[in-house]
Image (cartoon, rainbow, N blue to C red; front, side, top):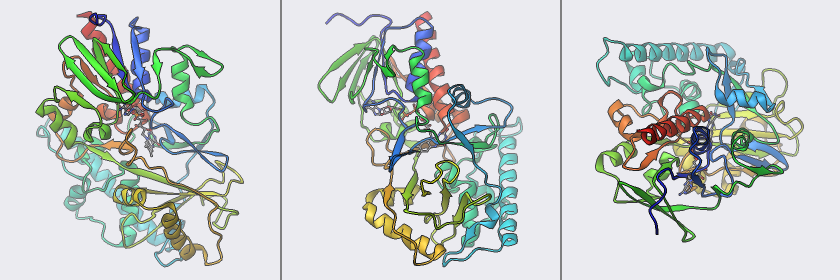
Length: 455
Ligand SMILES: Cc1cc2nc3c(=O)[nH]c(=O)nc-3n(C[C@H](O)[C@H](O)[C@H](O)COP(=O)(O)OP(=O)(O)OC[C@H]3O[C@@H](n4cnc5c(N)ncnc54)[C@H](O)[C@@H]3O)c2cc1C
């Protein structure tokens, strides 16, 4: 074999970050890349699913606006007229159910919400103190630690459910884990008005739109030979001047450089073997970070038996077991007439539910719904349980910055190793865990590589 061309690049993964890295390279004139994607599609964790003919989002679902800047995902969504519906959490205090059924009184929930707002404001202030000149380098605390400082630790099942709604519902991990310094203030740049994507083309059409801007395509299918689907990268051997990549189907690819865009979950599970092994400092940085799990369980019923109309979209279920089928949403506005309800679980509950049969999950879910809406309600006709944690191409849903993880470790997490560059949502500290994080990560990593080319 002749040595690889000096400008050749292999990109591993065709999610938002891999596609953005490729686009950035292409636009800077570096067109000699190939993209190896394990699955049969592009988009990665932006992935549409189907529930009895209705498009639902198994992965990324919400776009954000209302802040001082506009999110790039939102900008593209607007451009392609992606249907999106404002998620109105405003009336949640009227929709919180007790463990055995029946609603909490509104004023009781409102007091719990006020305290949760106070905790949020406290975390935001703490974070600002940490980052200010007076803060010591790497000072941090978990959200739970901050709650202790404030002497406002949630204890009752209701307080826990509200705490879950404020924190786990976003971070997909409990407040005991999550870093205050890097998590707060939330939604500062793009705003916190959340819009639920409900479009038959799926949220992934945002990634398709980007890809079709620079990869060749025919009748909506990408035909660019540089995109290679169904290529599961198994091994990456590297030296100072080349990278050799082996895929599961026995193919070997060589290039001068590589950009790895797989999730941190994939890296933590050693699903790609690096030869030589990644250095100790790099493995430490990878394995100390967190990959969280967030699961939306979709259920289609023969008819609606839950409250509908303004102010009913979201309801909470309070259980002594924190995080037991806690947050529910009906899709009356998003998918009218579909009779689809979905419930969000995270972390240990996600992992537990992924490992059990869907029949068992239906039985548990119906146990909850019967408490809320009576014994006469019908069984679901369909259930969809995405299994992000078990899936070897993801091993979780998105990253979360744990308390105690230093900026130095984070720099190590992003650092290249010889000719191998790392990207992905987990490498963008400002929008970690979001599609915008992956968007910026791809651009930034490609630009670092371009800088290296120029030097
Ligand atoms: C359930 C869920 C809910 C979410 N909700 C939101 C939300 O509401 N709003 C929001 O902004 N974000 C949300 N996100 C996060 C968002 O989807 C991700 O941050 C973003 O899509 C990650 O993009 P990425 O390019 O970094 O990684 P990925 O999308 O994971 O792309 C990496 C690609 O690498 C491929 N790959 C993996 N292993 C290999 C291998 N061995 N060889 C070759 N290819 C490989 C994968 O198939 C994948 O296509 C959610 C994610 C999930 C899972």
